[in-house]
Image (cartoon, rainbow, N blue to C red):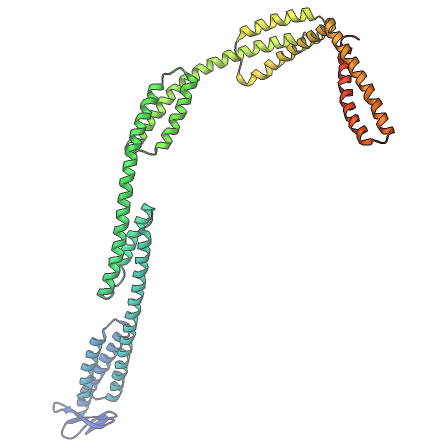
Length: 409
């Protein structure tokens, strides 16, 4: 007879294993010694230990389904319960019981996880639908179209929901995309129509611009080109394949006209610059007549200068006020000298001036007397009113006396 802590072999060759419920028959051994019998069934026990360990690892580290895990546990439990091994079978049963609990716990966790994932997927798809419905009303055609395509890719990456919920959300999502596509198609159809109308308008503008390119009516034609440019901008863009060609023709026609105008203006500017030089010399000659000592000689000299001035022609626009102002200053000086001479030599004007001065002096003297009388009577209001009238008459008298002085009186 042979034994160890977990089993024994009796004299008949029967092998037993010790359990919490007492000894259980493992089997019969007739092929060798009792030690060999125990060693054989202990190896079978070690095999069960290894299998249970492997199953525990699979449950812990892989996505083994609860159903497959329970089947494997059941198979191992049958082997343990068959008592065909020598070792701590109760410990193996305990491990299998714990493994059952683990599998059940993981099954509940996975169930909860699937529920969370389904809920997250639902919220995610609902958010996609809401965004898609908002984008369906957008006029940012390119950006919104790209975003809708990205939303489709996101949708494809999400788990499916239950059929009813998934179908309902997909219907809203698909409807939003279709609505956007319909609006975008209508927009670009309208845009195409507008661009075709712009093309026709610009064809007309190009034809007129080309017809005007050889005009020499510089002012009117330049103004018309500005109007054509305003009409061009207001017409909008034509189709891309026409826009550049039309613009090149339109701009080219303008360039021909303005190049010709610039050439003519350059020649004119050179001529006007030379005219300015000549007029500045005449203005300097005229200024030498000041101050006027001999009116008759100054008048004759200025007339000669002015005749030569008028024969010269135009000067640059920005220089005209300055150089003409110099001539006008001399001309005004001659006119003032003529007026002074006329006043000195006109007896009728002198008589009128003396008569007016006498009348004003009499009126002033009379008003002064009335003011003194009013103040003596204490009537200051009347005196103040008469004083205002006196001030006005006195100013006229001073002016008349100044004019009379000009006659040499």
